[in-house]
Length: 416
Image 1: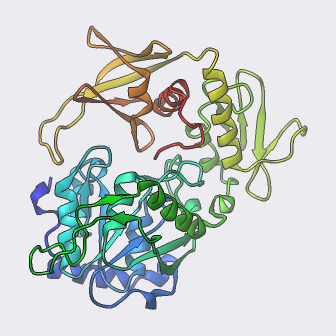
Image 2 (image 1 turned 90 degrees about the vertical axis):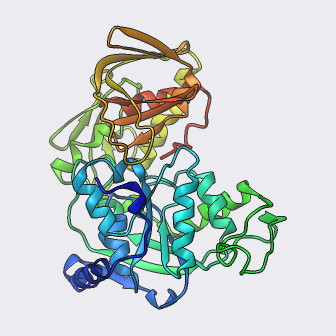
């Protein structure tokens, strides 16, 4: 693993040279760029975009900018394995923890801006599940609202179809990257911030410290900008590929009609073992009900209908049992301490989330499951009473959505 302390340092000559060489291959990758002249060729700048796929940052967004950018990325993925860690280091990534305070990561990002570099981040914190927007992370909104550098919004047209979060692998497709206008926050979003001469503190030229941020206004401003950049992206999804179609149960983990925990995809047919409902891909990228009683629905419509039904079911009775693998979460980024997963079971009900593994049983409150963080598609990280545990399971999304439903949280605000 690359040591955590080495991330965030100024880009070396070989990193810049590698970026320049790979950028020459951009036309062969099917990347079309528009509005790149809006990004200044020197000085600090920030780029934000909706997060659709694992390849948003590399190669699509990175190779579309006029100069190398530093990306804020989840420390979970940066330190997932040695090869990925090395690649992200060469690409100039700055690892940050999404679900806990990380002043070190923020400091590294601000130092990059103070050196006049470009910083890129995804304010939603993670890839979108159904292509529809998810809430902006309050920590990202606070950071962006305090920055004293231009912030540009980027659209990634066709990116969701390249590699949706629920799919096992991506596919080549032409993507258009559009550099849109600057993001401007309403006056008064930051109140009472310090205004000191730039010589007193190194971050003063790029960051306003002190005062108070109107988080709700900042999140709303960013979310509207990302919604405009996303456009009709979910409707560009092509479900005619059988390999892609068979991955749909990872997203529609409950039947949208009867809420049976688990759907089955064979070939180009998605069915429910509980109520015999059946969907097939329509020519326009939507899913058609085999009964013909309802019109074809988009994937995001089915997903939201599933969430609404789950919230209604939780008011009466909701119990889930999943086979999981459990381990303690790493205490620090890049930790060399290896912890093995222990097989176990997870029982979710109004009583809480009961974990049984290694001969021990522990009950976490429903609020802990609802506040969990989904990493990828099979990992759920939970925090409670000062400790953190990771659950790895094919039903991790079911536990997460079920916990949110039992806790009474808004069904449609599924955090990334």
